[in-house]
Amino acid sequence: LVGSEMCIRDSKRIGLHEDECVVTDEALDTVINIFKDTTGIRDLEQAAERLAAHALYLIEAENETKVVYDSAMVKELFR
Image (cartoon, rainbow, N blue to C red; front, side, top):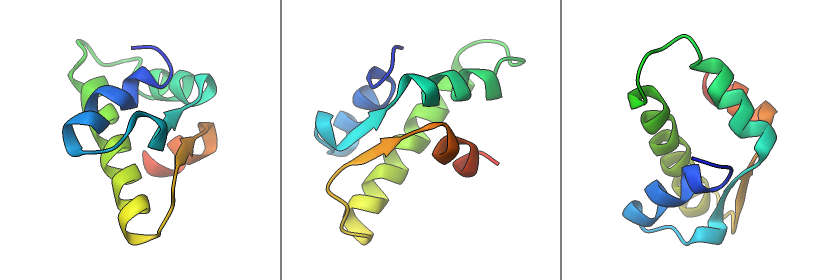
């Protein structure tokens, strides 16, 4: 999965629009680095689901219109 595509696939499934959840290249590198020692892609798929769900929460509960994940946000979310 490349850049925002990581969030797009899962965000569509939970009702977000493509432009509401953006994962920067830096954030994607951070996610990959966090899960670099795991085998398979299940952890990466779950990370994408978590980002999409978190974006939906921010949009619904915090009235955000768009969530752009950078490296710092990813580190905070997955610590």
